[in-house]
View (cartoon, rainbow, N blue to C red):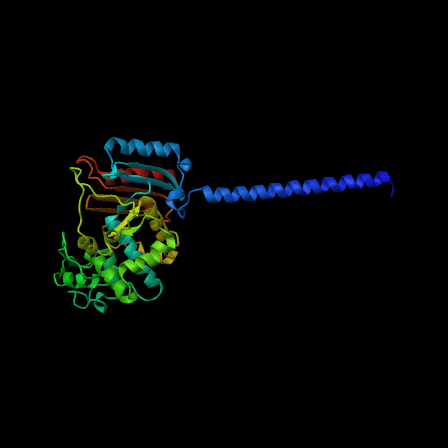
Length: 373
């Protein structure tokens, strides 16, 4: 081989090596960019502290502000589209010393009923329960319990009527509380099979969960929902940690509402939870997208059980599921698609003016969002 040919082949090998190095660097750079993009794009599984305002949709953000700002709204509202947070708005005092923020936790009131229904359905999926089981199997002392099924409790068509305490000051246990309430329960044959909104239905379901699992409702919810979803701003009202982001509820006169611990306990399975708007969205989305319930279980649970369209803690409106809550100075509203990908959530801790209907605002925002997607 001549010296000239040797030099030529040496240059060819060098050029080939340079090309290989460049391609490797490009590939590495692409993979790094993908990893960065995944890590910095807000999804339903990301902790709220990592969600950046950079990813909000400017038009949606401006629209949400324009809707809520003139109302002297106090709370946090978010809009989610295709699993992505696209708008958020917070305003007003969370406590006398702290403003409402994206991470502020609010008492979600009756929105908790869908959480309780999900815990029930998880046991059904594990064949520990059937929705056709009679209430008599668990609480035979309840009047009419031989007629009432778990499905009817979930749909609030049981015919049970109860006068629940509004300012309870002493507490012993969940089961002791239920036994006390059962003594005052009334079964109405006229209401049986018809929708009648009564929280006692979900309180009894919570008691059944405790009987079957041997765990308290709080332990079960922590194990089955809070930990798996890694919720950061979700706690029970009677067990708020010192570093909690929980807001206080305010009266129409802007006075902080003080709720006795015993009263907070008494909202068993129906209104004990504090959650941030993002934690609430992630939880409700997980009920619907196959994370907490498989698709068959979700389809079985979230169906209309009466003319009211109520079932499993939601009002069913085709692809849109609705839930509302109110109490102790809080108002809460969820509008979410059946696949959990799109949602409007409004959490308020200030009583709005008499001419302000936050439920109607939630419906309007949801209608605008769902028409777009």
